[in-house]
Length: 360
Image (cartoon, rainbow, N blue to C red; front, side):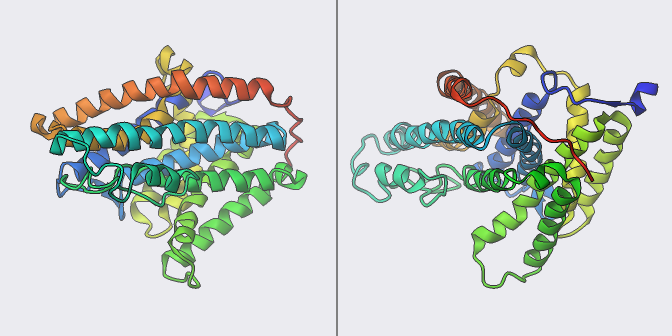
């Protein structure tokens, strides 16, 4: 029992974060399944569906891990790692969507490919319009015109642009020794982002567009995870504190309007880190991080399954089949694209730099 109150270093090489991120990706898939099946339910709470809360979980864990990466590597190596992790698999995904999934959907619906390369949005326009991570195009011609959730081939990938913006902010801030050393400064960044979300969430947006509003909603989750990285570096993980953080995060997320999730971000991050030290994951999950591929491929596979008549298997059958299909494709993405590119990027990057001691 004493160990429950004792601080321990976080086990970066022996945790269950791969499993947790895969579960979060699965929750996103499950939430979207209701839309694709044309069901009126929208499971969630406090104005956000379960998939949205899962994305919040992604961002707090990303804030923790990406801040650690920035503080331990040079600016150049960090940027190479982030680009290698996000872009290659993403570009392959949108290309496969445009030139494999979309024509398959058209063949299933009309029996031929007439108009595929000439009807806007053409597959080339889809790839070109989304290649920068910023999603300009959702449809490919009329390939998804007759499904319950029409003309949207991948409504999940829009978050990647904002994720990469968070990386860019961390890249810049990490160049300053005072930011790497001061927990108060990192905490101030999180608190300031929550205050900004409070303003934008109540309609004070100074005429700024929806992209800024989305960033103001998502960045506090990332910043909360960054704050907890410095907390864990200084004090380690205390299981009793982690167990207490989970109900605190849940209460804030469930009952505080507008900024409840953003206020909960550090508690959620610490709680998830605690759980990742006590809940084991299968060895093959520990060695293979398929969560990113699962996240980016789930939506198009779910849509293609609807076109192929997958809803005839019932909602549970549809969800089960799409989980299996998505996992298979995500595994291929990991083995053929993500792991080889990341391995090469790490091999060719510079050696780690010292991370200065942290002060309050």
